Image 1 (cartoon, helix red, strand yellow):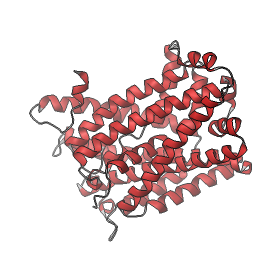
Image 2 (spheres, rainbow, N blue to C red):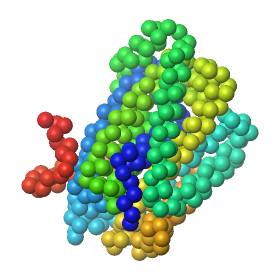
Image 3 (cartoon, rainbow, N blue to C red):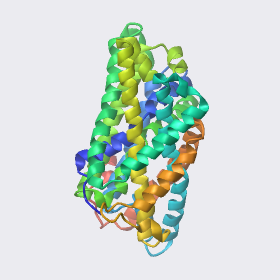
Image 4 (cartoon, rainbow, N blue to C red):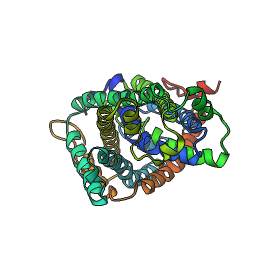
Length: 390
């Protein structure tokens, strides 16, 4: 495989994957869960959880800078010659269930925001067809060598952050009431535990993706240094942008208006700067949604490849493109599996992803990595998440 991903591209891949259309679609859901109050608390809490898990990703990536990400970590943690092969094998099959759902959520988000520009696309059949079409385009653009993909990801990650900041600026510069009346209510930490927990489920979905570059270990330049830094930087950048987005939207539109909006970024931009600004922001959100699917499919395609190469999965998935040296069979297989998932409602997709990723994969990875580290204290990595606890 070709090492064509540097630090900037690695951060951009994570950022593009994390953002997408997610926060623009789910922000009204967060406000609904918290009844219009303390909505920023959910994004701050989600950032804290993502940072803790991101530190685990950073340490594991510095220990095992291989293709496959979680697959490689599970294999090493449970023993590469024993139970690890079985656990890793099960993980790859699980990935074939939740990865297409993750990718499809980005396609659905793209299609939903497109209805702001073309209302006729709001018909259920048209929206689903558009989501499937985006999936085909994403697959086609990823069928390239990794240096080309890295350059594209750098642009997509930049657009994602700029879009978040632009919407936040539009909201803060044109509040519906004096900021002294809107921001304190937004930032007060007084939500009920159940309401805050429900909102955290949504924000954790929006923070997902900070470990995607770990799956590209053998395509990253100096991976033991680059990947940990990329994970930490991407979580920090996105967390700041999410909180600013929430504050800006809360300052611009009353809670009832936020909950009723299906294109909140476009609504904020239109209220602040007019229809042309709303169209520009809508296009930027659509590009951001595309960037998320781009990063998700890129990372997911490396997992079956790594497993097949190790003899833990179907042999054809280990084939690399003859000239581009990327896992063509794995890429096409997961890309095609994501297309039928576009027919599912978004809330069903998010619920399935949260159960599959947060409750199973992340918890098992975190616990097992610490158990393994205690059994082998003399083995040191370039990055230690335990420093945070001291």
